[in-house]
Length: 540
Image (cartoon, rainbow, N blue to C red; front, side):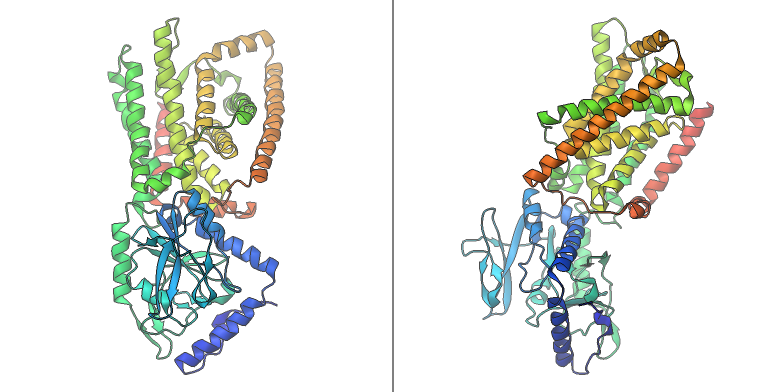
């Protein structure tokens, strides 16, 4: 049965009568949704809530157990618990008509409670929410101003009067109205999530019976105060302190400023100075950023070690990085662009020698630290921040910022391709240490393998033969890597590994989704810095 929008419902004059009429009509329409269609809609809503910055930064989630044809968001429970979050469900008291939340511990099951609503067992601990809690509310319908239409008992409205956290209402798009009848005790939600979109609720709610607009000052004041208190813990699209491009911009600025110190790094202290600069430029900002994001954000950084079964996949990707990087250099700069010199960020040069001590210092400053710091910022942190908009958006955003980091127009395409390969390996292995090792191995090749590459080129005696060998190796190991990735994802599917950290995104929607994700003043500043200093460096 096709769904119709509740905005087109004919509303009676009496408030109770019109609410009752809307409830009956919406419930019958919702009950008529085919089960397969309902599962598809529920899954879309679940993915959007899971991608909310408020969900990812929350320390606790207040959920509900669906009854009848309500939206089923119970899979969020396992996701939240796997991220170390507290998950709580409500218990309703029919005598007092009040509701309290109780934590559902891992291994516990919901039991039937008041009104036949599943609730935590008797021994479940009472949970007291705070400003770091996200409450997911059910509803028959909701309007764009955040006003819910529930079942008429008012449990959630009483609870929300003293609630200081974030609120989101889950509702089917067909039951999203422009306005709903409102009573004095109704408390609007902050966010509305349908299968089509996640949207911020309006700041005003209208009295539909009298046509007068009013502002719910107490509720809005509490929401504003809660936002201010938690601004250093949550990531909202309007919060400039937590936009990922702000972290990138800070590394760009610090890296550019480090160039002023280059003349003061003499030969004896050069490597130690470069190492210290990288800690100041990348590591400290990344630590501060993750600290501001809260402890729950650490679970998104994928700090676990890779599996031994993934080793051959990483080797294949490494060969693709080396051969693909060389081909990109030849494509953009010609065969003459290949050289034995190694420049870090186009500023700090490294010259391997016969001295073991000097080579160890070079290895630390030019291979180990860059690999660790760059992967922490551009893969671990940035991918965690952007993947809620889709893995494609996450990979492209990470690769774009990574390519701009080096402030080189001739090498931009090469670094962009390398960034995509590292991002792909990051998601395949789900391990930061894996891509750190991959990046480290690539840096080691660039530092110490270029002379052998030059020797191979000379022995080949022909540029076409040399390029043919690179293309053959690149294609061959790309096929190997793709096959290994398929095996890895097959094992993930067989083990039921969680993949709800991202949302499905059609390829046609990727450009607009990427633009929406990156749209900020900080991104614009990063792009301007890249072009200005790349052009200066190109003509200097």
